[in-house]
Length: 116
Image (cartoon, rainbow, N blue to C red; front, side, top):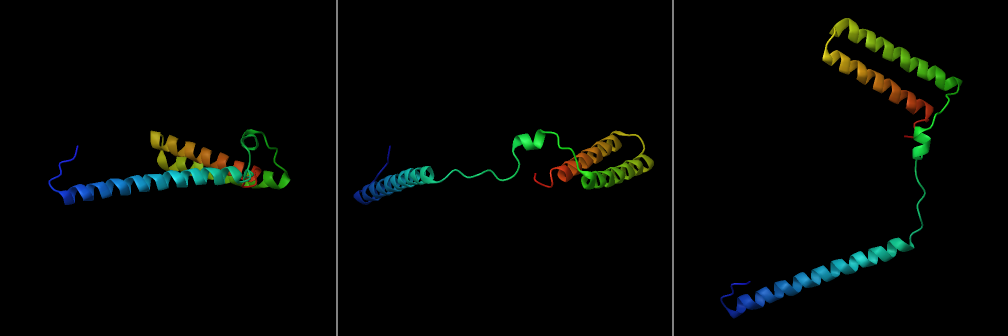
């Protein structure tokens, strides 16, 4: 395994092996200690909405409806601008889909009160 030429090389190699073993033992001890410490920690509460909150229906209130209407009007104007300036092509279709996605995401932000 080793090609050692003299006693000094043997001693240096032995010292490297010892140091490597010591370092690995220290790493194992640290991991074990961390595991014990984590077991003692209290369970943290979840921050933000649950998955159910995100996927369930949320009926907007009056103020939210006004904000959603503003977003929809802006999206409609942007879609009209795309139609008037880009013509019919794959890129225009992709742009219109992204406007729709942006509008829907903004509306979700309104109804979820920015929780996501």
